[in-house]
Length: 266
Image (tube, rainbow, N blue to C red; front, side, top):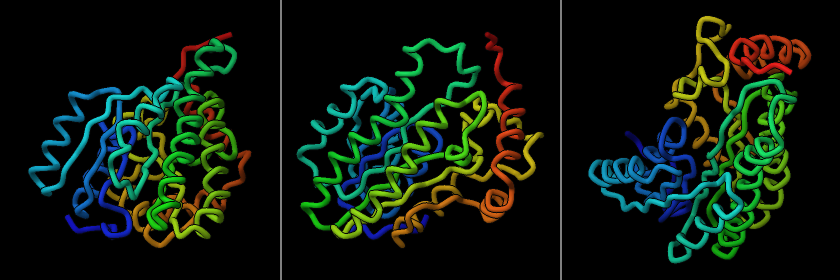
């Protein structure tokens, strides 16, 4: 596996949230392959420990496991405190979840839970590590958003809104951080073949375009970060579809797919 990032610029340590599976796990692997030590963050420390040992054995890097619930407003502080002694050159903010259902069927606590996890944790971690990176004068931040979020996604309205916030935050900070010598890229995740794919309402048989592999998704994201692009939507066909399809048509099509995965009624 070839190196995708300059470890002198983005190392010696990188923090990856949501590192226990899917895209987060692949980020950890690609960073380790680049010779960057990894801080693995999620709510599943046993799995993270297994991943860390594997990365250490395969790539010769060091690792640290942090058990943190980023859906809790104390979660980001746990990450900040437990990395205070490390020279962190990169934050990959990837933790998140999607809850499918009719908006009015959710309780207020559910709405607050997903907003804290998908948006507020990103804001707080980016602020914390952004300040640390600015003092170094080099490094980067990669924020994970989602295709369709900016246009709105029926039956996933709150999750989409949180990811739209991440996209907007990243686009604004790209200009600010560039002046500080930092890279910042928003990964707008196209439909990608991960364990959560079908839970989010996407049946492979209904997809007009085949889902991307996590390897392609992460490779394109890291290449964009290295080039300091403001955002990247992996997959040429998905970029083309997104550019050509009217937002109203995309909402209708996505809403029909999402509706199949919810039993919530009002």
